[in-house]
Length: 101
Image 1 (cartoon, rainbow, N blue to C red):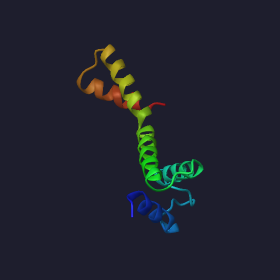
Image 2 (cartoon, one colour):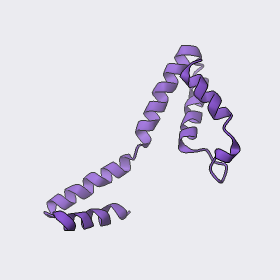
Image 3 (cartoon, one colour):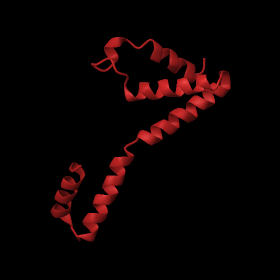
Image 4 (tube, rainbow, N blue to C red):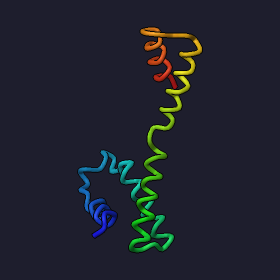
């Protein structure tokens, strides 16, 4: 069996106890569901489906990996540099900046 097929089977048989308290899907399960639905809609089967699923899941993982947090860190870092902060002052500024919304 292919890795994707094995993963799909595992996702299908996940016990309800492992789902989040409200019965919602985890982010990983949601990505798998979305990619699988898209592959089905496009009529992919076999190797084509496996390649599509790999690409789709990789793209979705890259999209969801804390990009906003990284952007915020860059912005806060630039602000700290512009203010010439160092040491504990910089650390305190960064904590306050990153915790603000």
